[in-house]
Picture 1 (cartoon, one colour):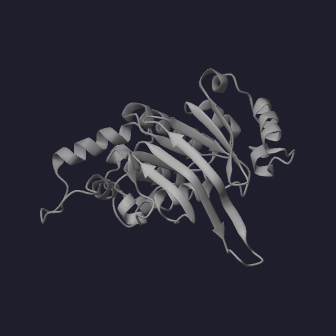
Picture 2 (cartoon, helix red, strand yellow):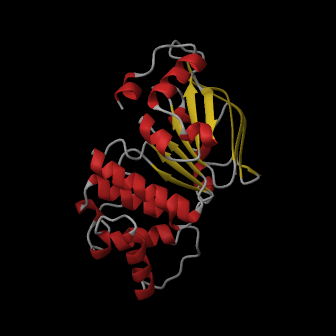
Amino acid sequence: MLELNHIYKTFNAGTVNEKRALNDLCLTMNDGDFVTVIGGNGAGKSTMLNIVSGALMVDSGTITIDGQNVTALPEHKRAQFIGRVFQDPMMGTAATMQIEENMALASRRGKKRTLRPGITKAEREEYRELLKILDLGLEDRLTSKVGLLSGGQRQALTLLMATLRKPKLLLLDEHTAALDPKTAAKVLDATEKIVSRDKLTTLMITHNMRDAIAHGNRLIMMYDGHIVLDITGEEKKKLTVEDLLARFSQASGSDEADDKLLLS
């Protein structure tokens, strides 16, 4: 479903601030894979998501989604394949619009627009049922303005909107990092349910090693712009945080695990 072949990306090339963010990055994801991505600050995790979504163009290499070469496609043209949830809960929803209006926009993405106004009764019932999976009581607040919701509620709604039109690829960029632990756990639980229900091919960045181990069928660790660990199956199920830190030190040749990585 996703192939990244020999991807290079450098920022501020030719200057004193030159930084190679991706360094011969290669990754293949099969249909239905749920891959968690972990690594220290500056490892290239968010840059990888940005080049997949088209927010950044690569210097060299190719990107293929579901057999189609999208390397040269701009972000708005890749949007038909991709759903994305950012770290900031304020992104991804329109604060001045109602919950049901936000969901209607997401539901109609990529469809032909008509002059028919409003949201039908059937659509409203569909949204209500979909919101129940979040377990946040939003199904009873369809006409509430999104700006009145908490950060966790907005992030959960963004997740639901990103998956309404089943994307070929779901990108989750530390989507629980800004939430309190209890709300983060609820959003992760909803993520697991939605990904499992719709068999979504998912790439999830996290700084939390326990979350990386607990979720998905595959874990990759990035360091210095490329993948240094790729763990699947039974090996992943048996992993502990201590194992992961030891494997990281061995694979990267460095004992300097990032503070944020250690603290989480």
